[in-house]
Length: 419
Image (tube, rainbow, N blue to C red):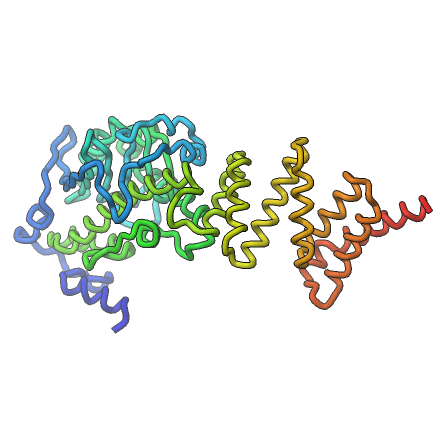
C-alpha cells in the first residue's frame, strides 16, 4: 500500500469521507463524539456568542525538541532583518505566535479560519490557545476572543503569515466591519528568513522539515497532512463526529510551538552566528550574505572567511569567494585601507581555477586603478583564451566576449600609441 493510500485508509477508518461523491445527506450530529468529549476545553462567551477554546500551559523554560521556546539571547539582528527595529525592544511576553487552519488555500472572502492557534508568554507560563469554530456561525465570537487574547501583544510571529494567515484574518475582521488587531502588530515572518539561512543545506524549508532538522521534533501518528485539513473540517460540520478533528488540533499546536522554538533558534543564531552549534560552512556562507545585506561588513567578512576555511561544496565555495571579493571591492571604493589588495588576492586565486569574472576584474583594476596596462592586457587575453578554448561555454562567450575584445583592442591601441 502506498503512503498516500495508507493516509486515506486511516481517515476513512475514522469516518472521514474524501471526495464530494462520498458525501452523504446530512444526518443528526453525534453527541458521543462531539468536540467537547474529544478535545477537553472550555466555551468562551462574549458579546458575539460562543467559541470553543482548547489550551495548553507550559513553563517558560519548556523545550520544544532541543530548543527553548523563549530566546536566551536578544533578537536585535532578527529585528533588523525584519526591517522593524522597534521589534528589538519588544519584551518576550509581548510576542504572539500564530498559525491558522482554514477552509481552503485559495484565500479571498470565501475562505475562513476555522481554527486559530496562538501562543504567548504570560509571566512564567507559555499559554497556547486554540480558538475553534464548532460552526461557522461562531466566527464573530472567535474573532472577538482572538482580539482579546492578542491585546497585550506588540509583535506577531508567523510562518508564511505575511502572505497567508495575516491577510486572511484581516479580511475576516474587515467583513465584520472591524479593524483587525493584527494591523497594529510588528510582524516577523520566519519563512523568508529560514529560506535565506538554510537554502544551501536543506532542500526543503517547510516548517515541518525545519522542526525535524533544527529542533529535532518528530511528529507522531496523530499528525495529519495539511492538504486534508479542510476536508476533515467539512466532514466534521456534516457529521458532528470530532474524532478526526483531534489530529488537526495536534497539527496546529505543534505548528505554534515550533514557531516559538524556531524564533528562539533563529534569534540566538543571528546574535551569535559563529558560536552557534550545529551550523556548518554552508549556513555560515548564507549568513554572511545576510549580514552583508544588513551592511554589517565586519561580521559578514568573518563569516565569509570562516565558511571558506571549511568544507564547502565546490560550486558554493567559488560563489562565496566571488561574493567576498566584491565586498572587498566595494570597501576599497570607500577608501578603506588594504581592501583592494585583498580583492586582488581573491581574484588571482579564482583566476587560477578558471573563473572568467576574476580575469575581468583583474584587467579592470590593473588598467584603471594601478595603471599597469601590460598586466591588464595579460588578464584580458587570458580571459579570451579561456572562453574561446575547448572548455569555454556559450554562456561565458555571450556574457564576456564582446566586452573583452573591446578591452583588448583599446589596450593594444594604447600600447601602439605609446610605442
